[in-house]
Length: 329
Image (tube, rainbow, N blue to C red; front, side):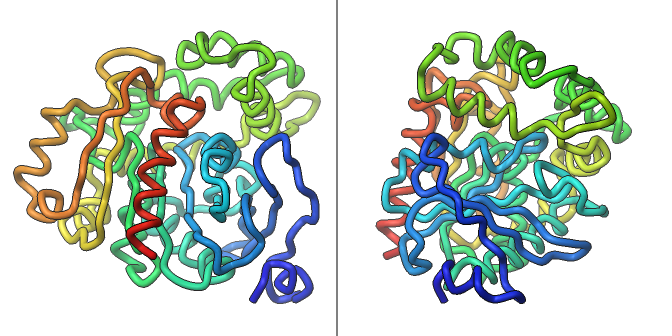
């Protein structure tokens, strides 16, 4: 069934018929019914549902619009990218949250927008969701690409959930509590972000897509604007990233080809980032499924954000995806 015919079916997603070429090739939106309401889904690329297709899963406080550069780096590839529950235009979907809930939501999205198993690409928290999706709904997943995420984070034992949030995200969590008087004020906030300070060249494609990402990330609250991500969603999800039961089980039973792309620099361009080569290797040494199925590649000169939100990072990720699509066909 084509996306055009889906739009005419009241029981199926209703796709907005606008194409914003400034944020990627053939961009459009749809919504898909999930538990508690409808999930917003962005799509790039061909309308033909039988075209090469990937599912792209964003990070803990992001939205689907973080994948604009990746979509541009994948001409001819159909990119399905939902706003996860509690984020973006899916921010009003109720809890509970957590990796299994997100995985089930993604299976519902694929049930309405895909015709068979796809390559699933997850960035940051999206990589953890991707692994749980592959475990809970293996018929939808051909292979996975994990972008600076997916391996349980190394944290001190005994932290309560709030301490985990602060240890992993710190100022990211603080941003969600902030209120802004205008889009321009939020833009100035992001201009100073150390992850983008040297990448945001005025007039560049990175700048254009960051402007779109920033504008999309805001929603009204009284006379002010607030980031769309719900704090409670971020807190519940982050607590699982150090090794929640569903994640550990998914890793132990990983049964599809997986490629981990990682950066030495973290969320604020600091070293070390979330992972090191030795830490990743230690997981491969003790988990047979990772030893069998996981390929690991460092993406140099990137940080946790720029690995997907700059042209250099997006092209590196696109090369791995393209190889995976070639193998799958």
